[in-house]
Image (cartoon, rainbow, N blue to C red; front, side, top):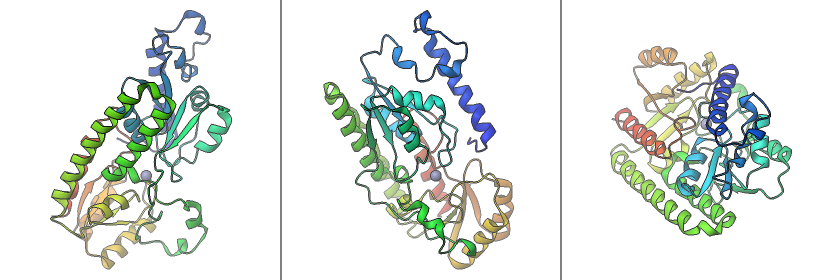
Length: 332
Ligand SMILES: [Zn+2]
């Protein structure tokens, strides 16, 4: 389930923060309880007595949290700035985010321009000892807009200059995810060399799982080369390139409601390419997509960009295996 609107996001944030307030309250000394608002407690977690000596690592959103938590295990304290369920692409930082960064040893971001909120937030946190890790370091980015049906008014305008850093959705390719895990591992070791052996072993185990996942994708998708799918979120160009599929994105960033313009783009795309399937996402306007897919005589399925989900690092593999099943049946 993904929540896209501003009001829903606020509710989710408050809910998550409240939970964090409750779980940390019991281990804090009474003198720290200066306020009854649980929202004030986020960022105060370093005062946890038991974890005082551990390094504090903040990550931006779920995939960075999974990869960092998988490498850190229990050797460091890992948090995420964007609560699960909130939308990363248009996220607005909170005062709690500034506080969390101000007391952190390390910050892990996806990079490639995804976390637009981050630069000012880090500046406001004024943390001179903070080590920042760009998990996408060394990854060759693809263009922001994949082979796409653009609306006429978008073509050749300033729109394309806003995203000069390339498409940020690298975590959806298991091989590029390995590079991200490696960058995170190296960052953790640099900040906390005492736990080097733990970080190296944990990273190796997670990378092995990513290799296994890659093998499964290769085995299944080699049967359907050049399978072309339409998405409503330009999130899958790396996955498509890796496994010899073709993504045609008609919408760049997921929307609550598809515009008539988007529908026209789908119709144009279906005429232009040999499209097998429409892939919506949880949270998109599936009623509209349903009737559209019927009109166009295409199947409609859901694919997950992994921008929200559960906090367990293993969730990456669950969601990706579900995506593989989806692609397998969509490309038949
Ligand atoms: Zn996205």
